[in-house]
Length: 237
Image 1 (cartoon, rainbow, N blue to C red):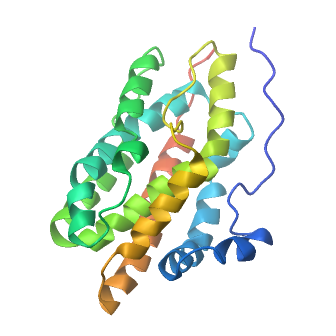
Image 2: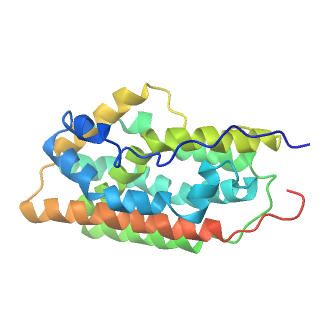
């Protein structure tokens, strides 16, 4: 018998809409302040999608969570393969890649959740992966916008999503995911991520494109969230 899940978390999970957000931004450097402000609307739009709300309410299925983990693996693998060299070439040599890396956790989670029914290959993930590959070759500063959005999200709202995801999985007798689990303190990693982005040496045009691409990165995420929202759990799951 499936156990009762914890009460839903208050919405929204991001801090973009909270009064404390203004105070939090005072501690950011100028580039991170701009990034944080620019992605606010896109962040809220992603939170409002059907799968996001279902996960926050503790109602997402293990099938959807397994599909999410499977979909994210290739993109993170590319980020972690190409990111260090691209970031260093643009002046951000201090990103703590080894501490931020999610690929090993995603691989372990994919294996652990192999008991969940197979789902079709993610078209959204394939589009994101192709997009990342193009940016790595043609526009490294835009590529790094995805680094900021993905890891920044994992260190922020992702920590609350993990609580709900792991409760859902536990209720179905499945192990907790490692994807959102970091070995170092979250505030330390957030500060290191922010500091590294302040180090980037960008032209005025590249700066504008970094901000634009951060919004587009949420478009890639929303495409995946929409796909996950359309997955139906099999009877009895």
